[in-house]
Image 1: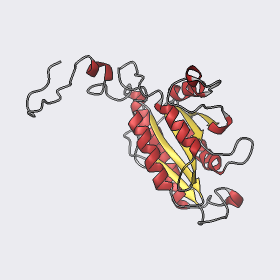
Image 2: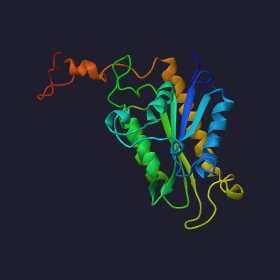
Image 3: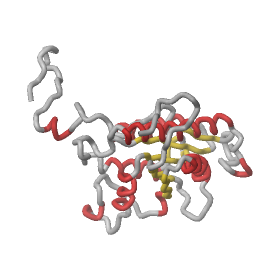
Image 4: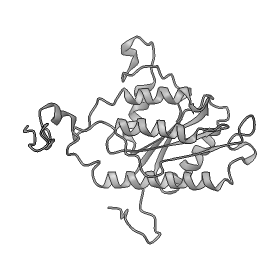
Length: 248
């Protein structure tokens, strides 16, 4: 088991962990994505610690709108989400990356979150919601204010679905307001210490959290099991008088 509590400056062993990065740019491959440029720095850091990383651009895939696991069962002719979902559910870490448009995350990012939500009613082997035991974070790029606003929305959504959000689980870069270079254009943003620090902290904290969760068999399974609640177990939840636990 990895020692994730050490304070001697020696990094823990992150080998065996896996991560999925979903780029929610509006730009299809093979065109340049500034969001991908920042993602790649975080990905390189994970890979340097032997984390297996998969990266994809959502816009390159036919992801149908909706909040069901497979939208071909609900009137859509095709849907790539079920295959993407398999990769997401096989990973210890999920990172959503998005540009800022009109002060908010991209429409593609909204669709990805909606499709993540489509699986939120499923449960894991412990009876918890399916995303329990996994860590998540986000990256944001743009030429207008809104990094924290986007991160607030994305991270709230991910934790609501069941992901564990570590400290400082967001990072980003924005250029001068208005038209101008985006992240990576002629090296723009590469020497920004604030972005580099936050990206490094986010990446390491995701690995630390995923390692803790993996080594301990996931998030503790007590008081958060949907099936047990539906079967009448109340885990000591008090009655309206505030004293007597509800009996199963």
